[in-house]
Image 1 (cartoon, helix red, strand yellow):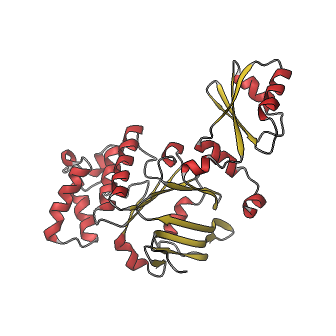
Image 2 (cartoon, rainbow, N blue to C red):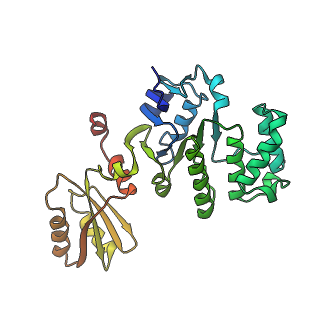
Image 3 (cartoon, one colour):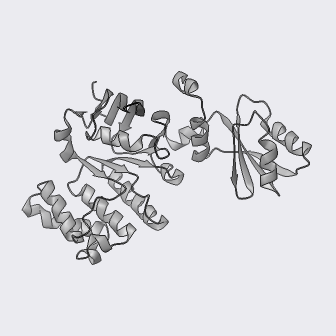
Length: 317
């Protein structure tokens, strides 16, 4: 497979089987350089397996990929110095200090002694870890350990950063600050591939792929995906949303109903004529008064829409 110079990652038919389990199924992927590309999907959707395939830790069952112009897993050894990899467990040494963890990573990547101290000091400043430089990693808060893990991952200035659910164990402020650092890195030219199951994080990506049971079911920018759900999104505000949901669930035309506080978000395929009339008629039949309107799709609506498609429909898409 010939690589594209504008792409950091290109995969075609990438598959990984573990016995009868198909963890990744015929994945085609194009990740532009210097962008944040997201993998959105629930646990077990194939996100982590795909990342391990792309960095050469796993051998594909079928298909292949080119990463930074190198074939994986064949050229994995040549690729390793050019990528950074961060897992949700942060992979830190709890009995080493912050500075010692960074020194250890500098040893692994054989950073020159003449550059090592200045690079570590730069990272301590950049990731707000100066006050913790002598603190043992095992005693740090989740947000501090997250910042240290990211500092370790970028110490050798990788061209590509692979992040496997890096915010799953931290608070909302730490997640927000972490994403600010990712945008800085992308602005400076680093390509970032990040897996997540948080909808708000997926919306921050320049582009993303939605994975479901090992299969890519959608990809594009968040705006493109929201504009192409194939669904009318109907918002229903009722005094008793539980009763309203019970009534609407009897309509076979409805693809999905989700309650958000006092609101219901109802997904109706665009092939159905007059979705507002359909819903209003059912509620009126049950004596339920509600405010009903068509609203814009959220990324959660997109996720629900594409993951509910039958397998045959996905294959034909």
